[in-house]
Image (cartoon, rainbow, N blue to C red):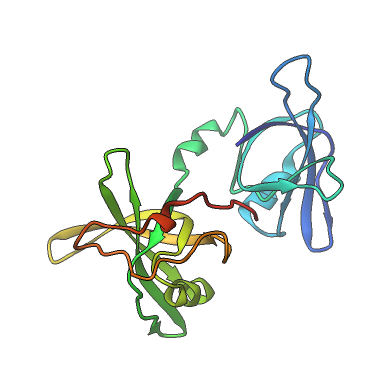
Length: 211
């Protein structure tokens, strides 16, 4: 999440809408950081980027990575908010779950698409194991079904609620999944076990947040 000042109007080039901004410094002793906002033409966010004028102040929310020359950041914004549209931030829907994958789950064919439902576990400060059921579609579905149990994972997506047979369920639909690189930690030989409330220590290590 970055507070930004627009420094130029948006340009469309190489299949992307490109808006140059600068991050507002936290003090007079720090210089502004260049931030390049990028999105595909036609999306809701891209249409917003095209409307901004030089000098506008905005709040941008999304994943970032360094620009190649080291002179700033690139962001693919999930949401861009102005003073006039600040209430839109209340509509933001995002969860982030980190932990180790549970027992393997089969990929299921549904029409022209595939889906995998698989558990992920993490331990809180009281050493209680918390379990979430992730839902992934398409290519992410294949990845989720094939990874070894205990693989350290970061999943980002949206939360929704559904009901079936008078019961309500929370659904965690995955938009992006990151996995700890192989070799960083040993993969547990035994799957995490929801019934025993255990998850291998290797599945709780530090996760690399590279994009």
